[in-house]
Length: 151
Image 1 (cartoon, rainbow, N blue to C red):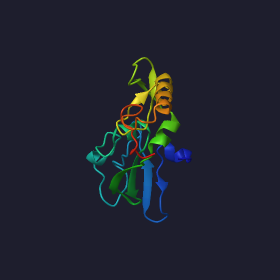
Image 2: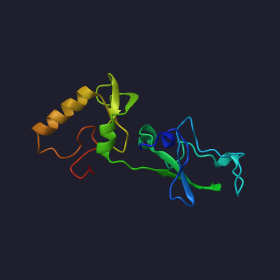
Image 3: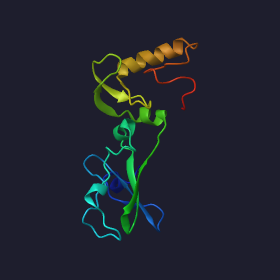
């Protein structure tokens, strides 16, 4: 998370021996087409953030990666980091999408699996109602949180 080169899409060594990992973004997909490799890397082997492995929350929170062999990028697999809801909400990523409750202004990711966004005013109101009514334990904040939700 703190390596600036890795965030910009430069592959980094994972284990010091065999594997590398690259952070992919919409501007910087995993593409070794035409570069030297043990097995030929074809144009269709490129991995982008639109790969089926990645969901909306992964794309919005920039958690799309590819793990591959150093000398053979043809041997690759998409990978993603699974942050918990509190980490996503704490990062306060502005999505450019309107608030899912009032539709008035840009929202921040709530951390739910459906990538809902909520503005600061609606979040404040939701948290105040949560604190006031302790008997309600399901369909909290955006409707996705409950007492059994992880963190």
